[in-house]
Image: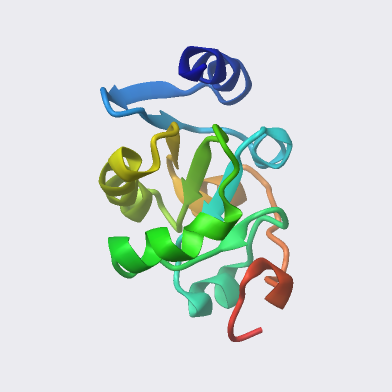
Length: 137
C-alpha cells in the first residue's frame, strides 16, 4: 500500500526519499499541493500565517512540540493518507517530518522551500481562516 502511495506521490509531487522511515522531500507547485491526495499541514506560528498567507486547503497547526502536535493532528488524519508539511522556508518541516514520521505510520512529505519558494514562483497565498485552524484570524 505504501509503495502505491509513494509511487503516486512521486508522479504528482516529484518526491525524493530522504530516510527509510517514509520521509520524503518535494518541491511541488502550489497547484500540485492543492490537488494532491495528501493532508497538507502548515506548521508555522499563527502570526506567520497572517503575515504571509497560506494555501487555502492547508490545516493550520503550529509545530511547538511533537506530542501536542501529534495529538492535535489525530482528528484530521485519514487511514493511509500521506501528510505534507509546509512552513516558511522548509527548515522546520525537515526537522518535524523526521520526528513525526515514525509515529504516524504514513508517508510524511517535507515541502522544500516552504511558502517562500511558492511565492517566489508567483503564487499569491490566501488569507488564513478560522475554519483552517487560525486562532488569531
